[in-house]
Amino acid sequence: MAEKKRYNMRISGLGGQGVVTTAHILGSCLDNAGKYASLVPFFGSEKRMAPVEAYVRASTHPIYEVGEVIYPDIIMIYHGQVVTHGKSYTMPFYTGLKPNALIIINTDKDVLSEEDCKVLSDLKATVVQFDATELALKIAGTELATNMAMMGMLLGLTELVTTEHIEKAVRERFLGNSFVASGGTAALDSAIEKKFKKKEQLLAANMEVINKTFEMADSVDITGDELIVRLKV
Image (cartoon, rainbow, N blue to C red; front, side, top):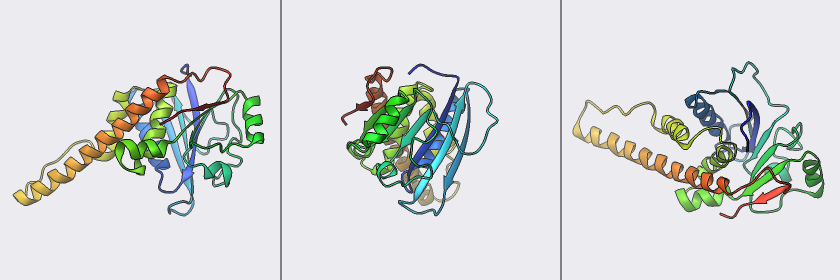
């Protein structure tokens, strides 16, 4: 996908899927790449399976807008229920979608209705579907890495940043800016080192997921006439 000067993104999912975390990491990635980003989370009750949305604006120039993204270039759907059950703050999910837009859906099923397909086809959108949760389980051993798979696919398709920018952002998210050793007992030092080691392992697993989605994205042509691109995990 040819890089544009500006992307407006809407990310929809369910509580516990890391939608808001994705927005924060995307912002850090863009900052690491010397670009600009603004992000806004939007959710009601903070509980699992409740609707969650986040809005991210990415640009090569300073961004002054804040708030909800009304007219997205990119939509990310973290759970099929956002499409089929209306579990989203913006319904139907493609409301406001600009022509020639990109949609990424975490699913291996046909969740789009005939009406959905007609609207998206008229807009010349491209829908990329893959089972991000299955990929997360297969590589990282946890569905909590679903958001890493979705983010990796997005950044692999758009080429907004490199994997080096992503790794720095993910490291900052999970490990902070530095590891500070304890000045206390050896037992406490050991406990801290074990905790740090687990975080390092988590980081490595997340990056493995992201690298895999970058590989998958490299095989996708989203400039063609195909409405739905289905990727096997």
